[in-house]
Amino acid sequence: MRLQKLKRIRGILLAKTGLRIGMSRDQMAIGDVDNPVIRNPLTDEPYIPGSSLKGKLRYLLEWSLGGDYILKAKERQVYASPDPKDPVARIFGLAPENDEAALKVARERGPTRLLVRDAYLTEESKRELERATARGGLYTEIKQEVFIPRLGGNANPRTTERVPAGARFLVEMSYRVLDELDEAYFGKYLMRALELLELDGLGGHISRGYGQVYFLHPDKPPEAQEGLPLRERLKVEEVVLEGA
Image (cartoon, rainbow, N blue to C red; front, top):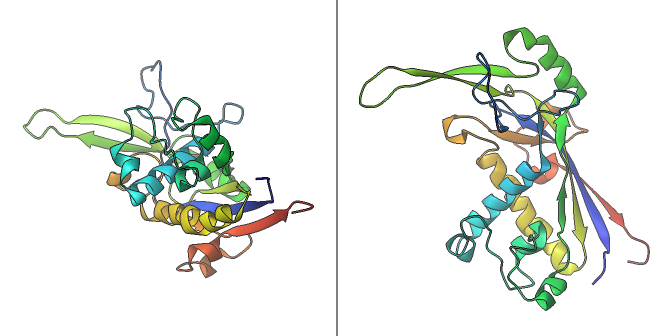
């Protein structure tokens, strides 16, 4: 087993509805937003952490496969398959404390195949959001919501910060190919997870209409890509290592 090539996946993630990936709030001052989005501490721009995107892809793939991935998952740990050919473990990896397989099996499976970078706003999208700052927060919108108790009582207002529909983020992933099985899993499982992401959503409050996303090829006009298969809306480049 050795690294033969890398597949570089690039695309633009379009928020078709408001997108909310939140941050924790240890303290809250009067007038603060109840549910703020996560931001880059240096630029104050909202972004999509690679861990959030990768975690949602894994979640969707596990649920699409079902079985032990769901039934044997522990409270705070994913299912650790002892099979070195397990697609989820191969593609997304297992933390040492979650890997219940024997050391020999873990070595046979090899390293995590998928690397997911943090996704930041495109320059064009930042300029568009800066013009809309007066209607919300910096690069975001403040959505007013009201919770009404089913058995009566006063309505409880709450404010939620989210990235507006139409925002675009640069997405980049790297996929390691160590053998023929990795090549097959790229098309069969990773692409399935990405397709499921478009059908499901990203971030919080998806059941309330948030988080619908759509991938676009970075070098093609957006209007020409509506309805195209996902494979045609991603830019995939291969880097073959010398001697492979």
